[in-house]
Length: 85
Image (cartoon, rainbow, N blue to C red):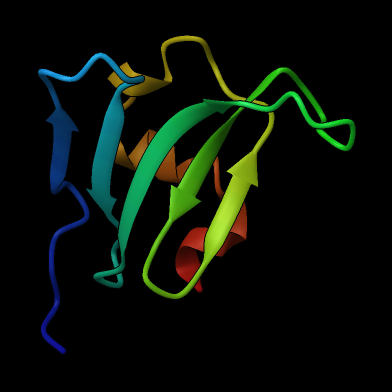
């Protein structure tokens, strides 16, 4: 697989739903990121960010209110080591 830059980013617009971001990590993995309500009893908070790739899905419970404006690099930092998998 060829090397791709980790600054590929897209914000989907024109939807009434919460903003969605598409970012690519340094290894070429694409992550779709969006915020969701979490009313379930097991939830760690009222809302979370969902990071999903073709192979894995992760929830992030601690993130800034302005997450949608973070750089792709800073957004991926919220995942910690998961983004390098």
